[in-house]
Length: 114
Image (tube, rainbow, N blue to C red; front, top):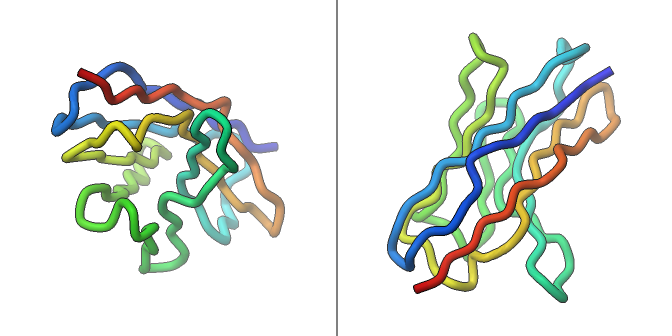
């Protein structure tokens, strides 16, 4: 019903920037919420940012550094990541909640290292 394709991950130095994208297709006419999660090695998956209606909530660890942008014409959600830190290293996943059901992207690796 809903397919999510992520891209944009890679290797970046501390202090650098990276932009992730999540392209959605299928039956996405009734979206309850959408956002980004991440999972670092040996850690639980955690919320990065989530958008519902006109507001976006960010995890304290990324506030002021990460931002979400929605481009409706492309059915794409972006995560702009600035001032990256080594602790941001993780697999990042996008999620759409459509008609109360959660759909996940395949994940994209972000590595922050010197």
